[in-house]
Length: 353
Image 1: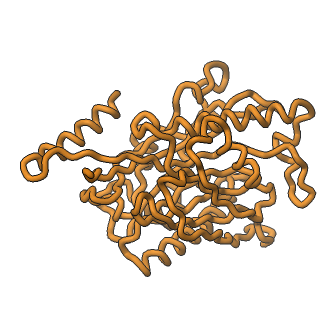
Image 2: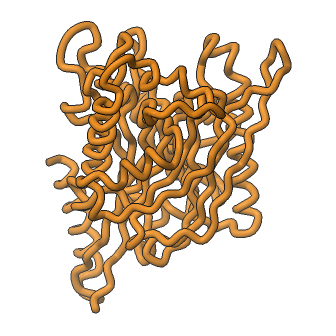
Image 3: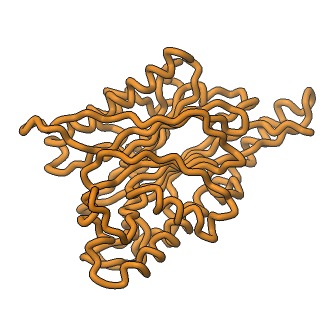
C-alpha cells in the first residue's frame, strides 16, 4: 500500500507541475528483475557435464515429479514479480543456476507464463558444475539486437589453475523502442571463505567494468543494467572499489554506476539470502546514470525492491524468515530458492494516441 501511495504521489506531482501546459500525464511501468533459481536442473544425466552433483540428480526417487514441482514453483515466482505495480510479470528477467536451455523452455511454457510469450537468451558456459546464466524477455516488449557471452578467466590463488566459472552475458536490445544493455552475472562463490575467494569476485567485477567501459566508450549516454548473484554485498570491494557503484544518485557521474540496493543493506538491514543468522544482499541490479534522469520521455529508474513475499519464506523452525529453499538435507522441500528475487521499476510517459 505504501508503494502504491508513493507512485500515485509521484504521478500526481508530475501531473500538477505540468497541468497547465500539458494536462495530466500517464506513465507506463515495466519491471526488470533478477532471480537465482537454485539448481534448476533437469533429470537427465549429461555425460559431458558434471551434473551428477546437482540436488536433482542426487535424488533417488520421484525425480520427475520433483522436477515438475520445481519448475511450477519457479514459474509462480516469476509470474508474480512486479505484478503489484506493473500488472504484469517482468518485461526482462535475468536468471542464474540453470543447467541448460531445456529447463528454461519448460519454465516459460508453464501455464502461468505461457501467455507472456517469453524469449530466451542462453549460452552454454564452462562452469564446472554446469550452471549458467540466461535472460528471459517478453517478446512483445523487448526486441534483442545482439547478445554475447563474455568468458571470465580467473585462477586459483594457491594452485594457479584456472577456475571454470560462469560467463557474463551481455544482451543489447530495445524495450519498447528504448535502447538498453543488460549484463547478467553469477560471480564466483565464497567457497573456502570470503577472504580466500575474494580475488575471484574482484576479477569478475573487473571483467564487468571492462564490458561497461567498452559500451560507454561508444556511447557515454548508454542505458546499462548489470544484475546478478554477485556473492558479494553492495559494500564489498568488487562492487565499491572496482565498479565504483554509488548509493546516492546525486553522486553518480556521467559514466558512473548507481546501486539502489546499498542503502537497503546498510541502512535497513535487508538481504536476499541468509547464512548462520546473518543476512547478505548478494542479488543486485545496478544501472548507469542515463537511467536516473528526470526526463520521462524514455524509460527511467523509479524504484527498486526485494521480492520477499510471505510464501517465499520459512514459517517456523531454525530457519524461520529465511528464503524457503527448494532443496535441503538431501531432499526436495517443495520450496522455491535460497535467494529472494530483486527487481526495479522503470517508468515512461505514455503518449496519447
